[in-house]
Length: 412
Image (spheres, rainbow, N blue to C red):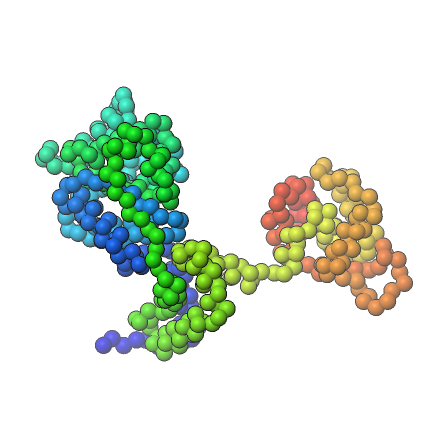
């Protein structure tokens, strides 16, 4: 039995964070897809017949987004490529309807993925069918009677039905029906009516095999899967830390408030990798968020300009307090000299914007007691730092360029 080196608590936490980040955010495939055993066996057998016995096939994997279509295919391809007969022979071509928006783009991508750019060269063919036939013929090595099996994966399959005359689909399915080249055509789609989109000649060449992914995963199984994703593995370097961590995860999943959140996720999507990764990133952002920076994102352009004017005054007078009248004068100078995008506001409007900043506590009076000085001349201090304002300007939607340049001169 190998000895495990002892780690400090900080090292254990860092290692646990790294492990969970890789697991949740890098979309690592599971050993076997959860609750999809029959679909897994069916698809693997179809592809095995293509890879090992040279039998052509076509199949559609149909299911809602997040149901595990890509995960299922990834797990099946991983096992297929572990077979000795498939490792050196099977070629994989992956197309996506969102990227390959017409047949010309698709053909270029097929050529690139099959590494046949040098073979094609400057040759010009009359049709898509001739191009595809030439590519498949070029894959034959040595014995002309044997061809390398090709697996075509068409993600967002329904979008390929919008190509002119559905030429790509027709030719791929036509090849899959011939005995010349072993080809498997796999379509992934979330549309249940996808067959209705196909032309008659395309539909007649499709095998009509469909693998449906309506996950039978129960809520209890979903919670178990979430717990497994958040738990540390048995081979974690520090068993004591690992046991305490896993016990805490179990207790967390039993909390009623956490159970309600999990149930809400379960009812909207079973894809806990994507949802939990997004939620963890959002939670991290909210924890580290600066409340004042968040307030700044909701300010008007006028209010943002007043803050920049205050920063100019701070720089000019070495941090001495200012009053509304000084801010208004500074703002007017900007409007007259530099701005081409900001309208001239009446003084009462500017005063109202200034008072709103006061209510938000982005500006505070120097004398918090009762003061008899007119409000235009009451001394104030800006309660914001350089970084907070600059971040707000960077994130502010459609912020005028001249305002940004004025801010940069204030914060230089």
